[in-house]
Structures are given as C-alpha cells and as structure tokens.
Length: 134
Image (cartoon, rainbow, N blue to C red):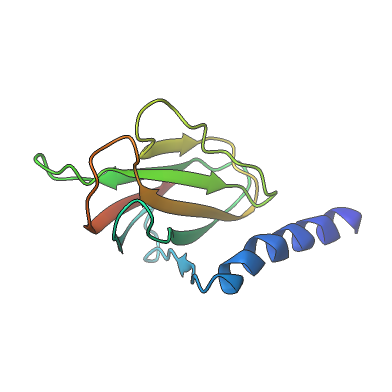
C-alpha cells in the first residue's frame, strides 16, 4: 500500500508543475499493435517553454526516444526524461542529447521534456520525435 501511495504521490508531483505553468503534456498514443509512434511540436528559441510528452510503458520494456531530422536540418533538441518514480533518466551527454534508450523500464508514465539544444545554434520551428517501445 505504501508503494502505491508513493507512486501516486510522485505522479501528482510530476503533473502539478505542468498545470501550474500552463504547460499541457501531450500523451503519446500508439496504433493498435504498433511499437513506434511519431509526435511533433514546435519551439521558439532557447527561452521557449518545453514541449512535454507523456508515454506509458510496462515494466521491463525498452523505451527509445529519437529526434527525426532531415539531412540539412540544424534544429537540434535536447530531452529531459523523468521516470514514473520521479528520477531523471536522461543521462545528459556532452552533445545535444536528442537520442536516448532506456532499458528495463518501470511501469508507468515517462515524462519527456523537449527543449532547444543550447549547445547548437538558436532556431525557431517544428521538430519530430520517434518513440519506440518494445
């Protein structure tokens, strides 16, 4: 019972800041039987509000999040990924951190915040993210 309460409390803490700052999380939905989904969003510079995606996974799955870019694109993003337990699982690297795989997931909603990569040139526009769950 304590574990269920802790998980519920953590989820509430993760969702509360979204509504507090006017940000709405976008639920990533998969077609029946699909393991991949594409989501889009837009950013307007380094100081723009992050685009937030929620994706539900089961325990023990592998979650991959990858920015899809055309060959000549310089619209780099960065991901901050939070597990259902509230842990930052982004594992920030020296690059723009726009490709991440999380193995052996815990069950629940993962929160993916997409921001403009501050290590690249500033840009304004849209982006595409591919989510894979196996």
